[in-house]
Every structure is written in structure tokens, then in C-alpha cells.
Length: 585
Image (cartoon, rainbow, N blue to C red; front, side, top):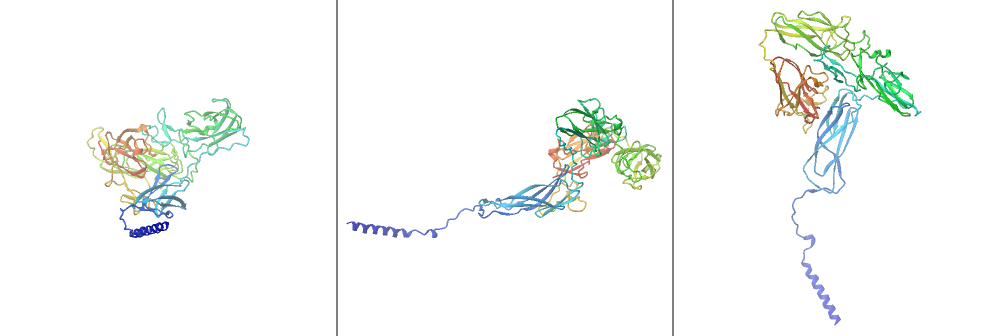
């Protein structure tokens, strides 16, 4: 019986296996159509390669030392590729920048191009003046440093002696520079230099700051006394070196007074002038030393009433004029027959000889208009300083255009002119004509437009229309061309109108500002109701009103880096093309 059951069980299993043979084999199953999906990135090792750079832009920031950034733009091939590294090195005058990418693995990748932008800071501190090339993955450009890019070193503190129980005090006596251009005594039209601030009693004084480039005063006697200032007789004195530095050593712990007496016989070299630091007309500082202390920076700032006259060899120094501006009578001003012509020029001494009061303005030819043959200079003008000097002439009775030429002559009577040669004269030129109808008072106006001067590099690396190469050697330093041709206007820009000539340092004193206005939606501005006179129109990009609208960038019109224009406005005249072009970086 058991045997029969075993046979039946075997037959049943064999039948079931036979029925299973009708199922299709897995390898022969029918394919299923699926929807298209993003490509799956390879699981191989990530792929690193150079990025595809389309264009570069070189940005020179307004600072000193100068900072230079390179903005590189291009496209990544897909969404799985990213910037991996940015390597910069310099070889001679060429900066080589390599931007690499890496393609990630194991991710779904979009096939569309992905734009990228990298800002790379170049290490330019300490570089000498000159033109430098930039190569970013084969895309090239260049920039020029006009001067050596080196910050002036701060005075080096004296190292304390090995005996830490002995203290040291040091500091500097320096010339706190403030030069004011304009005729002597004419405070209304005076133009202060950088480093000047308004004085409490009127006029200008130095700013009390030890600015870069301000020289030390050698040979000044500094006193050290015990106790708080003012103190009794000094216990020690020190004389400043050629950099204006002094030092007191081997000092015990205690309280001391450091001072400089400008009226001391030894300090005759300081007069005339006044102290600006540590406070106006204050030349003493109280200090407290602990055992072994080193106290530095006990400085004293002195503002000379007249710039010191340098000691030079009159036989070898040079005389040269730079014409700054016409203070009065611009060319072709109209005068009535027989009228008085008061001509004033502003000139700068760009030679190495100081112009003393033995120098003079001399008539050098042209029409004889009844002026003096020689006019002595009213004050000494040291190299770098300006002077306003003029002559009074008489307009002839006959109608026409007249011109007289002038030069300067040194103490020996040797004439010299603009940039040195005696044939490079300054002149006055005016027209004698019939007087026109007198315009209404305060009927003149000044206006213009502020626009965006566009210049960029195309994807092929070429400069766009509207760019101009401003490099001196044609190496391709491109800026906006300063021409308004179908370009956007800039609204909301604050424009200032100031009295008098524009300052040489481009800083408009607050006490000269007559009015401000804001450009409209078309970039236009207008000052109305003006009288005849000399005005300065200025836009300050770093002012609180303009910094967010203009920075980073720079002016291209009326000149590269120039954001102000002087206007000699005639009565009733409408000057509505005083424009400004700005290029964003």
C-alpha cells in the first residue's frame, strides 16, 4: 500500500513540472516603452577640465594701493558640472589664471548650458608702474598702473632695549599740508587742496591727520618734562631726524609731558605757522609709563603759514609753468571799445626752482594793450603750488579781435613758459565789439544729462561698439568712448553747483556749494536763475546720495576719472550741454 502511494506522488510531481513549461523565458519577455528622462551621469571617476571662458572684465578699484579684480564669464556644459578651482600666478608682467571644472558622478544632469561668473582678486600690491597682461583660460586683457602700487610705510617703532625696566617714547613732528590756491587775501574764491578743512575763524587750515605723503620736519627740538602738562623745565630734549622722528629712551616708570615750543630759538624753522595736532594751537601731550613701556605715535602736526621754500641750486634747478585755468576773461570775451580788461591766470610751478618775489610776469609780444611790461610776483610759489596773477589792459577803440602774449621771468630776467620753453606763452585774447542788450539779472542757467557710457566684451572676446582703447601702447585697455549715442540715461543722481573754479583735487568744499538737484527720469538736470560768474558743476560718486547708484564705476566724460566741470557763465547765458558720462564696472 505504501508503495502504491509513493508511485502516485511521483506521477503528480512530474505532471506539475510539465505544465510549467508554457511560461515565456525571462530573456524573451516583451520590452516596455518608457518616458524620456534626464541622462544619468557616469559612475566613473569625476571629469576635471578647464572651464570655457567667454569674456573677462578687468576692474580697477578706487583705492590706494590700487586693487585689481578680474571678472570672468562663461558657460558650464550641463547641470552636473561646477567650478572646481581658480589658480592664479604671475610670470613677469603677465597674470595667468586657470579656472577648472569638475563633473560630478551619480546625478541626473540637465543638458542646458549653465552660465557662470567668477571674480578673481589679483595680487598687485608692491607692483611697479606699467602695463600688465591677464590671461584667463586663453582669454586675454590688460591693465595699467600709472604709479608704483606701494603704500607708504608707517614710521617704524623703536625696539625696546633688553632692560625692560627702561621705557621709551617716540613720535614724529610733521608738516600737516594745506595749500590754498587763489589770489592772496581773496578768501571768497580760494580753492583749498586735499588735506585742508575750514578754520573756525574763516579760511582754511590743515586737517590734523598724518596723511600719506606728508613730510616730517627735520631739526625740531622736542622736550620731555616730569609730571603732567604744562610742566616745568625739561629733563631731556631730542632733535627730530630727517624723517621728523624723535625718541626718548631709558625712562623710568612715571608721568611725563612731551612738548614742542615753537617760540624756542632752536625751533625758528617752524615760524610762521601754527599747531594742528594734538589739537589746534596745542603742542604738548601727557603720557604715563609703566615699567619698560614702549609708547609710540606721540606726534605733533604743524601747518606752515607759507609753504617752506626748498633749498636749491639756482644754477641747476629748472623753471616751468603749467597753465591751470583762466580765472577771468576766457578767450573771445567781448569788451566795449576803451573798456578795462582785468585778466587773471592761475598757474602752477612744475619746475624745481621756487618762484620768489624777484620773479615777474612779462609782456612777450602780440598786441600792445597798454599793460605793464613787467609785474613782480606778489608772493613766493614753491614747486607744486599755484598762484593767481594778472594784468590790467585797455580795450582798443577799433572793433576786432586782440591778443597779447606773456611769460614769466626769473630773478636774472630769463624768460620761461609752459613746460619750460620761452616760446610756449600764456595769453589773453578778447573781442572789441558793440555792447549787446543787457540781459535780465539772474536769468542764466546750467544743465545737461547724466548717461551710462556702455562698453563690454562680446562672447568672442572683442570690445563692443562704444568702446575705445585708452592704453598708451595699444595693448587693449578699453573704456567707454565718452559719446552719448542711444545710451541709457541715469535718473536720481545728485548734482552739485558750487561757486568759483573747480578745485584741482576734485573735492568741492561744502562752503562753496550753492545748490543741489537730482536728475529726472531722462537723466536731465537744470540749475536756473543764475547770475553771471564762474561756477563748478560736480557729481560726487562716493557721496551718500550717489554711492549706491554709481559705485562701482568711473567717469568717461568730461574726462576719464573726472566728475566735475568749470563753467564761466555770461549774463543770461543758457549752458544746457554740461553732460557727464559714467561707465559701470
